[in-house]
Amino acid sequence: MAPRRPDKKSNSKKRAKARVADGSSKPISPQVLVKAAEFQLQEGNVEDAATLAKKALEQAVENSDDELSASNLLGQINLESGDFEAAREYFLRAVSIDEDGAKDEAVGGGPEKFLCLAQLSDEGGKDSVNWFEKGTAALRKQIQTLEEARRRSDEQDILLEELKKKLAMTLCSVAEVYMTDLSWEEDAEQRCETLVTEATMVAPDFAETWQTLANVRISQSRIDDAKAALTRSLELWKDLPPEDPAVPDFPSRVALARLLMEVEMEQEAIEVLERLVGEDDQSVEVWYLGGWGLYVMGEKQKASKASEEDWKASWISSRVWLNQCQHLYKLQDYEDEPLGEHAKELLSLIAKELGEAPVGEGDDDEWEDDNDDSDEEMKD
Image 1 (cartoon, rainbow, N blue to C red):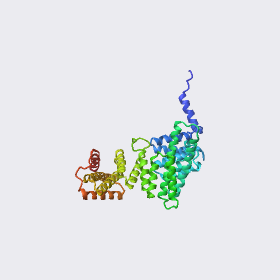
Image 2: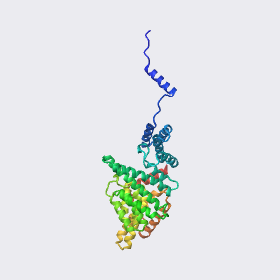
Image 3: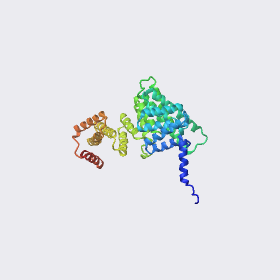
């Protein structure tokens, strides 16, 4: 009988089993696990990302770049999942390896962990400022390195602008701490002045820096200077399309609208709020601010003896905004009671002058759809 040809598949399986049995199979490297975890996090698979990152940390050598990258990533993952205490512990572990942020960002170096710890600080105040300052020091080094390069690629130019913007944002964040938690410090005003001045010099085309400067000027009762700063902030983005990166994010523009109203720039505030409603019509605060702004405009028109038609038109528009605010307030079980009470108060004042709103005022297809949906839910 002729000998049988060896089964290659069978032999390969046996060899694989043998490698597992004697422990000679090579484990997946921490770098590969971190990359896989980053991909899972980008895809929104937070649990899978955490599993992979923890495995990477287990296999990392103590105080190595592998431990740094895994710790930093686990900090970000826990931040994403809302476990802030765990995030803080992982970022602190990363800081113990990269104390000044000098290591490459590809392995978890750089300023990001310091900035996260500033936001996660339980103590706030000076502790937050200390972390922010570590972040600004790391950012300044990165900026200096790029600026001193003899030749920069287009990508490096873009990165440089992004770093300057991040530095300006961080400086503004520190200024806000001095305007709130540390406002009692003797040098708080001078610190704010220094911080916002540097921010506007570092990133003069960044709208949020001028917005923060305006906030500082309001706190100093320098209203004309605040108005000038807010006008500069608006001019940088108001004519740009929503997707343009120079347009501040939604919460920043809500804060901007509040500042505009504080310095009696109601018309500009309404323009900002109308744009916000066009992007997201489910924000209770935006509808409330719009209603309040229109009420104040009508009040001023009435006091200046403008035509009755003008101030009534402003108050009718105010009533539409405030009614939609109340509709969403109830629908979302909104928790800001003072906001809800103030909206009711404004509607009551308008009703005294104009009477109750006629049925159907302000209704449109979208609002009707919302009501229909809530009615269906109640039936269910």
